[in-house]
Length: 215
Length: 215
DNA sequence: ATTTTATGCGAACACTCGTTCCAAGTCAAG
DNA sequence: CTTGACTTGGAACGAGTGTTCGCATAAAAT
Image (cartoon, protein in one colour):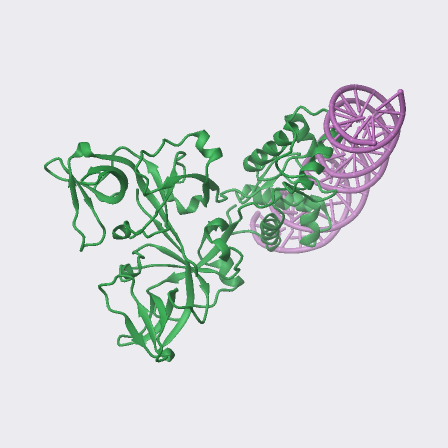
């Protein structure tokens, strides 16, 4: 039994369940499904619900009212916003304390791809347009995965000890053959930054960039 | 009654409801709340639930099992992906048919700001790096709000009838004093495109840009 | 001291709701 | 035609569940 061979009735039931959950934030009862799908008997609803379970399209909690769940659901994740990328101080390590107290954004797991399961993601708001060279603009939100190292080409947030003192910046990361680190702006007209490895402390890899426009 | 002056018991109940919903995708019953919060009587649970309703922290559907909803919840929105920005054909108007059949991405309403309530948003995947001048890269997903007109500075997807025939492009929109339209790349080193208004057909305004990085 | 208000407990009621059983209809295979 | 699997319908049972009522306790107000 796959998704392919469903009866019209079962398809209609599934659609109703989905729309009901969307509308009410809780699942429908067997009788509500029956009424909506023109099924007079609860046993028939129950029968077809079991078919949907076998097809893997729903999950049921036995003996529990409204115990229908839609699996493969896209989860929402709360990601703490630890600060802005302009901060010159060290980014605090995210923990449960930060999670509950500070600001946060909520995003759906489908946007994170294979990083959806990473538990200690954190977000930074980009202040100012100094990061425009990395295709990241003022007001953008970047979601990062904590990391101490990076692969060539990764976009990283790093504390760099450069000419202007310590600052947090967003650049593409490359390890040169001479052991130094090259922080490459995305804009080809801007020159890369060459630094000794000890002057670059990687805070995390950027896994997502979100830009909200006034539209 | 505001959120401030809740009893410990009421706070505990609210926390339990939130975690229960997160876990089970459906709300708890009065008795489940009572058991979790060490309340022996269902009437006490009911009593305190009414307090939470007065405080605006929950919504209840009367006489319905598990009829508790958490308001101000961040909703997830399904946005149909109608194609890529490289398409040279007209973007079909989104309707319910597209919604259910085609591909789609799901995002949280908090990312959309005041556009969260717009019902006919659609998404396009950016193919190729020709849009890099608008701070949008290959593989990015742009979410658009349907529009026939735009304000100066808006980022729009538009069909332009230019030198290379009709094509769909992503640019910043400006209306010149002489009635013509200027499509301005974000990159200052690239020259704007001046066109007569009849050769520019706006498809929609970009309200969100999402970029997923391999990280 | 008395009343009022807020909160809590237990019990009972009525309706909701999942479950189960039996009968019947449909339809393709043998 | 007969068989058997699949599907549907109707009914009833029992547990789940929201609601309501009376009463008790404590604290604040009068």
